[in-house]
Image 1: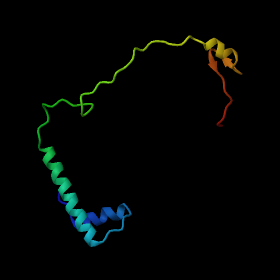
Image 2: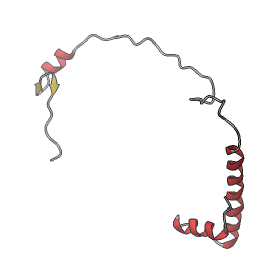
Image 3: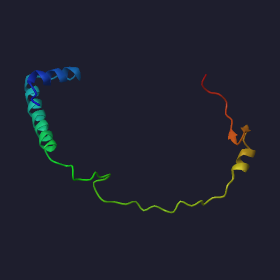
Image 4: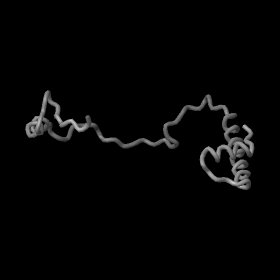
Length: 95
């Protein structure tokens, strides 16, 4: 995709960025290089490559998912101001 100087100035205007002609030319050459790199990357056949979830093959050490505390639900609900059907009732805050 070829980017003209007017395109760069229009994008700068839309982004509310003040840009002079020298900066616009510099930005145009940088964006042209980026678009060229994107074109080169799109040309590569990646159909045989499996997607990765992470750049490195790392595994998190996870502990066993086991209950470590006693069930105190009844005790907590006994001291709650209002409980109904095992749920805590709270005052309405937003109307």
